[in-house]
Length: 253
Image 1 (tube, rainbow, N blue to C red):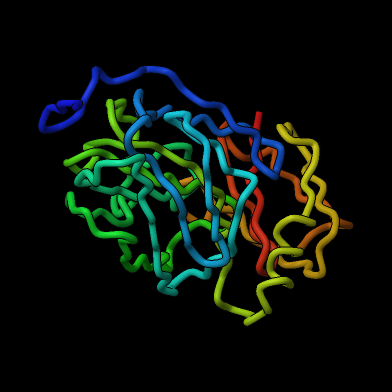
Image 2: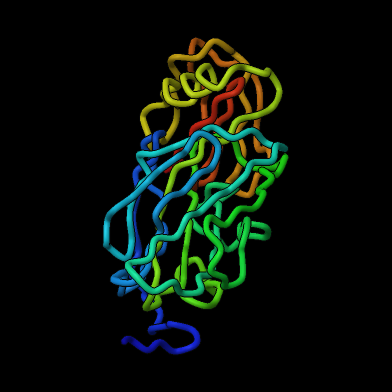
């Protein structure tokens, strides 16, 4: 028989995970992992069109190739099914979403949902995508921890599991179907990225653009000039360009 402490914690980890986004820029997320999945782990996650059943036993699972479209201002059901080897333990949960695409989960509201420890299976809740969320692809982190709610998106603990997914955040403006929205997000191309002077955009059906900083502040807007935007006046950093329903991150050097 195995004994567990009340929190199931180990010391925090300082490791990071670097991810290349669909726009070609690199966003770095902190790591989070459980060190022991022998008795309990995440068995299934449902959110939007995500319905992912996993059998892996690593403390961290990278499912960022699994994605769903979500619309700003809309509510979605999150469902997490725990998997136990034999004994049913009390599990707690946290779901973080990087709503502004800045590479962390520490901004206000980015702890999107949590649930105290229980033996309920599956556990469900509701997550509303903020109307101010940055359009484009971003990260969702699903955490299951023995007994107590994870205290941080970067926490390292003993029992449970962590899984990362991709969300494609879209505007509610045009009412396109899910498949249409996905095509707009994945097909829009911006280059070079990083960029110094002129940013070129292809695979878009609109000439109107908006450029936001990663805090969601509108920096510039206008019409494309033969499929390009002069960004030489921007200070160095990460930005989001939105064209119609689609958005892509880019890095200004």
